[in-house]
Image 1 (tube, rainbow, N blue to C red):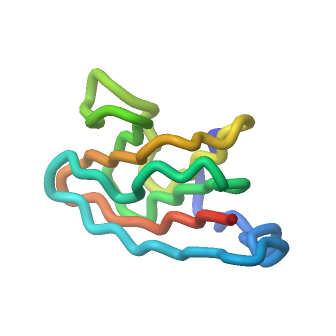
Image 2: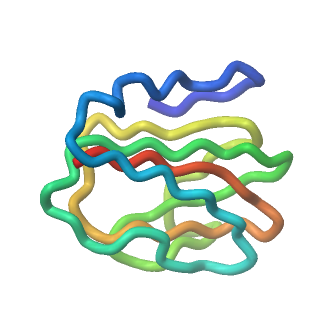
Image 3: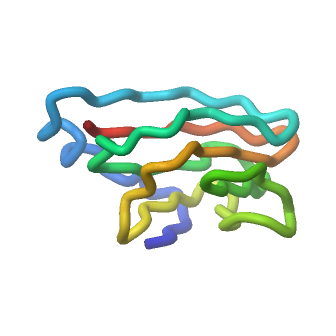
Length: 100
């Protein structure tokens, strides 16, 4: 699910898991923000900035590799990725919620 707009995604579902990680990200270049985790049961990334960002799994993100998340948008995949998470978007910042 890719969302966009000023309305924030409600993360209450993340509270169901035994371990929930909230990661604040401030992106300047492509970097790994989460390591491989085959126990991951929930994943959501929210772009809180006014610029686009890209997220990819298992390989570095770029404008040509990854899912684009529009400014103030979010991405919640139907299938939860178990591999590492990379984010790219100069000037972008946001929040990642990982449930285990």
